[in-house]
Structure formats: structure tokens, C-alpha cells
Length: 353
Image 1: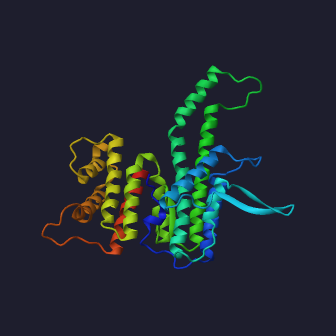
Image 2: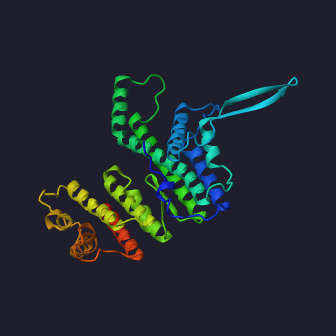
Image 3: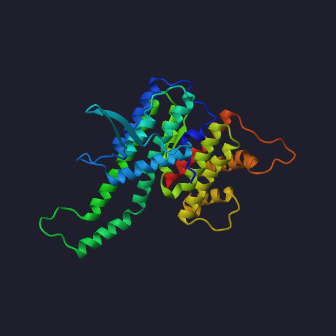
């Protein structure tokens, strides 16, 4: 099974020209966040936790497959010792976390370019964060069901002895909220580690991507990614990530995907509000649904004109064949503007719901 990793997405986009102390610290800090905050490997008694062992083994296998390896590092060890004047062979298996740690925290020996070395190890951190994000999505999606099951169980099996205040449903919701808050704190820490390492990267919704402007990242990108992390906006999240990857790798038509993300936002809002009639033929008709007085005028006239103008003047030339006309192209600054325009509008519209 193919796994999308940071090292491949940015294969043709050099970020590091050498392995320096900042890079070493970043890898060590990122690994510690994974090992200490996301997936602690040992329990309070120092024993392996079966669920953690399975997770670390899965991370090892996923990344090793993408890098063309059997394991990220040797899963076994062996050495000779002397006893009573005789040689004795001692061997065993490393823990799953040790296999990953040896890879991520390996000393750089110059056998591969520093850029490749760092990216491959950041890919491990990306996969670990993505796995935790996927776990939380499942937990959040099943929360209502688990709360109902807990309430039903409480009715069928009344608690005996000392009764703690509150109910199981509230306890589940509080625990679920704490899990999400802890992960958000870990994400914020990782992004702060990127900033302190003077590398223009940002983690959001399962992916590490380039973020060139710190002010844009804090005011536009980060709030946008937090909003579209909800499963409701999955298509928006997917298309905007594609736009960023295409822009950063010099791929074709990144603005087309950013526009798709914005159009999806508008359509989802129209559908959610019950404004979609089924006769819409394009983005402009969905924008009109948001503008309609009967629907409460989610946007006003000048906002409608701004959105319609973007789709007609910027998106449409890339969404249709050029024919006998020159193939449309945007400069790098224009591409950045278009992507940021779509992010700003999507973020703003979602917040109006």
C-alpha cells in the first residue's frame, strides 16, 4: 500500500544544504514529542504496552516500505562475550521503538545528501502525527455512540458501592476533549520547533508542508487548517493540500486546486443550509445561493462580485482549454495571492456558519 510521505512530496524541492545543529535538534525534538506525547511505549511499570508496540511497528513498516527498506534499522542485535575464557554469542530483538529511534536519531555520515537524510526522518514524524490524527478522527466520529452506550450500560448495570459524581457520558466527553487538546498542543509544539529551527515548515491535518511567510501562516494558514480538519470539510482540506504541494514542487496549475477547495466550501455551505436547488450549473449559482435575501444574505453584493470575479477571471481560464489563445500562466506572487485568497475566503465563510 502506498503511503504519502514528506520526503517524496518535496523530493525536487531542496530545503537543507547541510546537516547542522538545528537539524539535529529538530529531529531529536520531533522524535521525543512522538515518543513521550503521542505514543508512549512503556507503561508505569516499564513494560511494553501492546497497543503502542503495534503502532510503532506499523510506523516502522510503513516508512520502510516507502524508503525501500525491510526495516528502518536492524530489528535484532548480536555480539560475542567472554565467559570462562570462551566466546559466547548473545543475541536478541530490539524493541519496536528502538528500531525507529535508531533510524530517526542516526548520526549523519554524509553517505546521502543532507536534504534527503533530514526529509526521510521528518517523514517518520509526519506519519506518527498523521496516525494520531486519524485515531482522533475515529474517536470523535464515534463519540456520540459511545456516550449512548455508556448511558445505556449505566441504566442496565447500576454502579454498586461508592458512587462518583457525574455520569459516564460526561466523563467520556471530557476525556475525548482532553485527547484532542493534548494533540493540538503537540501540533503547536512541533510547529514552534520548526520555527525555532529556522525552517519554513508547518504541520497540519496529517501533512508537513512548506509555509514561506510566518505572518501568513499564523493569520491565514493555521486557522484555515484547523477549521478544515473537521471531516465535513475533507474535500476542501484535500484540494488545498494538493494546491500547496503543486506550488511548492513547481507542478502545474496549483491555483486550480485552490479554487476547487473554495468552490467546495461554497457548495458544502449551500448544501448544509438547504439552499441548493439542484439546478445550479456552476460556482456563480452557488455563490448566488449565499447572496439570496431569502437565505439571509450570508454575503453581500461586493463580496459576491469578488467571488464571482475570482472564478471567472482566475479559475476559469485554467479550468478550460485555451484553444487558440496563449496558455494561461500565473507568476509565483500571483499564485501565492490566489491560494491565500481561497484560504481567506474559505476560512471566513466557514466561520459564518
